[in-house]
Image 1 (cartoon, one colour):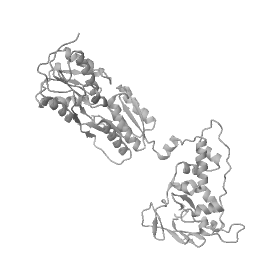
Image 2: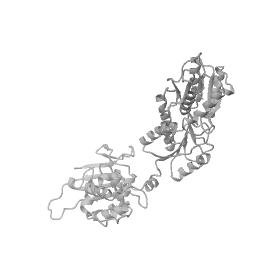
Image 3: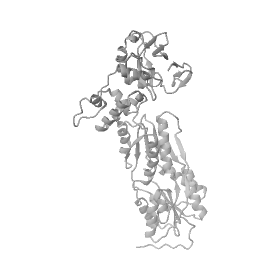
Image 4: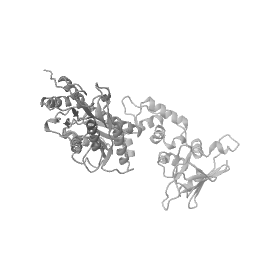
Length: 495
């Protein structure tokens, strides 16, 4: 049981000790915060040891635990810092050697009634040496419970400490499974866990947040929680946040400008660390916190935009219809309240010019409603039909509008796709199960949500920087709602 623990000066400071030349990775750094939990009790106990009391006046030190054992952490003297150089076990004596020539030595005394010197490993070993000595010789056990909390009294660490006759720091080490917990006897740990369960103790979220200076919470703003687009993006956001141990608060602004301006402030009042905006039109910066906008198209300080490549999406949709033989193509233009509307419309018109397609005014209808139901596309399609335009295909603003358009066409005796082909946008979950199933431009909505969450957390942690715009690539999904134009099509309206 003889050997020497020595501080390895040139090694990684995270593992500062070696045992007989072998670097021991069980020990924490000298400045590890787990030392704070046992300062007072150990310091008082060391004062009770006459053999080292004199030396303590020169250099005090405190005891701290780690996963596998006990670490001696020296404090600073008035003149200069004293660092632990080595811990030597010589026979029955423990010696602590500090840089600067200070040596603290302690020999475990013979137990009363015993004529034999105790074996060293009964009092100390590599993992639990001083904690065992101090517990056996200087720290009387307190096993009788103290005053129980009164009914309705808030349960805190101090309350549990008064009941168990333990310090709040010790209870915190046990309940948080902190690095120093193994230096606490198993019996004491069991008592702490049982008492916490008995009184239904819950850690204070705000206290923990203040201590760590983190809330692990972000705010997510959406147009409507029931919207299929937003719900799929939110699913991706949630998946990544759960993996990273983050929580999120969400609110729907229903595309009201005053709520879009007010909700970020309310999120900040609840100490979120950042924002994710889904299909939300921002007019200005949201402050100092990092933010990510899904389907954001404006360059705003502090905001990273995760956006679909609208030009590529327009090419996929129009070229698909063009290759099928369609030349009379009608369009739904999104409302100004939707963040994608203007950019998507501009890209569609640019591709139409490249294909030399004529887009007369009677083939264009503007969406007016701010809803997330098929009604969005129902009335606009009725308007197109009533204008008398002989269009053979219709590109809808999104899949929800496309479902409403199909119903309007059916009400006028037109079949999809034999009379009019329909192309949607987004590829929401119900698009594949509608009758007919929708040909659409797929936005990888869940992937966009995960990307937004990943970018936000990296920005919160200061791990990376990102450009103002992060593009996402679309995909054409061909299903049953498109086919070549029918040259024998006749319009029959139902009255």
